[in-house]
Each structure stands twice: as structure tokens, then as C-alpha cells.
Image (tube, rainbow, N blue to C red; front, side, top):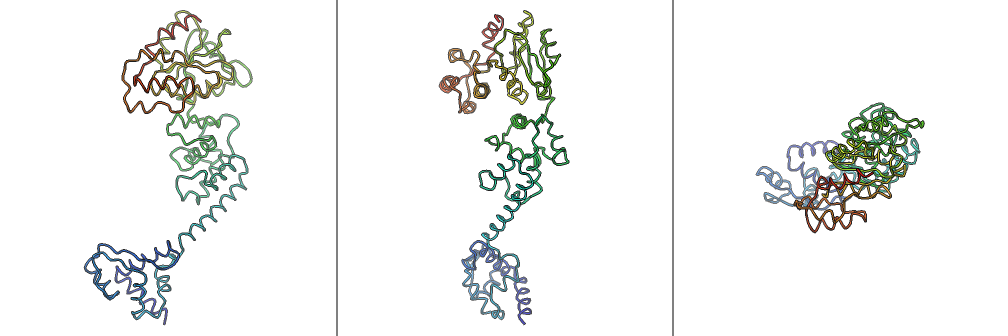
Length: 420
């Protein structure tokens, strides 16, 4: 008898869409409250919906109407189905809607812990443990809630963290080694984005937005994303391989006073990079390729091999790899860039990364000749975290709001190199 009444009640509610909607709204209320109660708003009711709702509630509703669970229950008890408890009917009408949000969260937490435990047991390497601990404690949050339940995706990232190479390895080959798919860790894939987030977390920072900064982050873990188009331009340098043997073409280029565009793969293959000149104690770095080329003209004309590097307006992974090796050799890095937000940002990175690095003709006195306006939107891009060497210059630029390009200081740069 009860089953028959339940079937008839369900059929009646399905024939009247507004009643089915009312039942669904109270089921949703149950999920948030943990019990049946409260009231729901039925808005923009049609004439037909008002009529059906009026017949059920035995009162006249408006075009928008609040209905309490108490009224809903009272109206239910006056129907021929009233012998059935309203919660029992709702359970039969909409099975699966009676788990509260709190219960759902608890279940998700249990499942999440189980996944973390399995990954921790399968991949006990410290980078994985550190990453999983941060996820468990909420110190690191994945960019989508459902990712915590995707064990296969998390396992790929864990395997990658546990398999970080000891020698330089190209990213596609690394991805194929850990996931049997060379594209598994591409930045446009979920696994690749999570892997990048994990590496950034292990470094103590955020995921970089710029492609070159992402490439540099991978390079810090001996992963090479682009080792041909990512290059540095050098002059007057020599290099030695891991086995201690000199890499001949570096010296050959220096001896014939020719510059080299050296791809990241070749820089990574060099254990040591030094100036060719035994007298050199510093390496000169310029931001712009045009300035580099002009300085190079004079050096070639004088047959001088002063160590010189061009950054081409940005710090790529190849640039960092090169400067790391030069700094490791004990050579002082001297940087000359534009007096603008981008040039000062590069300077800030170099000064903060390398002990003993210094600015090269980038003083407040030299900035005094600036006469080009610095727009407000670009002024905001001045580095906020400065090295002490930059603090007076940043203050002057904020006050004067002008830029000066390093081409204006070419004669001073040339004089330093000609006299070496």
C-alpha cells in the first residue's frame, strides 16, 4: 500500500512542475542545514504555477512567494498521501539528495587523505613528501577542487617530482620517462600546470606568468624546455666541458674576435665558463643588442677580447645559466641597462642573485640627463623590492618620472672597454 501511494504521489508531483521544484528546493535546504526546515523562494510564478501551488497550499500565492517547510509539511499532511512521512516521500522522489554538505566534505576529506597516503607510500622522495604535506595542510591549494580526487593526475606529478634529473634533461624526454607521454607535462595540460605549481612552491614562490620565467624555473631543476631558441650572446669567453676538456669553438670565436649566439643546450653542457683574457676580473653585461653590437665594433677594431654579454632586453634561462657559471668562477658581473622599469628590474634580479655584482654607469648622476617622460602606467612597473645599489635610482625616477636609454651613455661604456 505504501509503495503504491509513493508512486502515485511521485506521479502527482511530476505532473505539477512547481511542486516538483518545491520538493527539490527543500532537498537542497537539507544539504546546507543538515535537517529539513527553513523556507524557500519561488520567484516569477506563472499563472498556471500559482494555480497549482494554491491548490496544494490552500492559500493564494503571488507571482513570487516564500514557502516554509512548516507550511509545506502541513499541506502535505492534508493530502491523501499524508499517511507517508514527508521526508520518506522526498527520499523516494529524489534519492541521493540527502547527504549534507558537511557529510560530503567529510567524505571528500577521507578520500583525499587516502589518495595522499597512497602517493606518499609509492613516492617517498622528499620533494613529493614536501608537496603532499603542503596540500594536506592547506599551505598550497590546487587550482580546481576536483583535482584533489584525480589520483592519476596527482600521481603523474608525484612521479615527476620523485624523478627530477641529476643531469640536464629535455622536458619532453623527461615527461616521456615519467609518464610515457612526451607531452604529459606541457604547460597547456593539467599535469604540466600542476607540476609547474609544485616546482614554484618548492622554490618558495608563485607560478611565473612569463614563458621565459617558466623556462628558467624548469632549468633550476635541470629540465630544459627550449634549448635552441633560448640563447645568450657572448664575446671574449671560453668554456670547459664536464670532463675538463676545453670546448674549442668558444675560444676560436674569441680569438677571431667574433661573437657567439650560444643556445642553452651548449651553455648547460659547459661546466665552467671564463673570460679568454687572463687579465679579466669582470664581465660586462648590457641590456640591448644594439649597444652590444656597437661596443663590439670598437672591440673588433682594436682586436680586444674584453668579456661582454648581451641580454636582449630580458633574462632568459640561457642568460641565467651563463651568468651562474661566470659568477661561480669568481668574476664580478657589471650590468648596464636602460633607466626605465624594465632595465631596473633586470638590474634588481642580477644584483640580488649575485654577490659582488654592480651597476655599470647606472648612477643617479648619470640619470640626471634623462629628458624623456615616463608615463604613469609604466612608472608603476618600477621594481618594489630593490637592492641597496638601486634604491637611490628608483627614488630619483619616481620623483623625476623620466627615462634614459643606455645608448645615451655609449661613450662612457666604450671608454671603459677601450682602456682594458
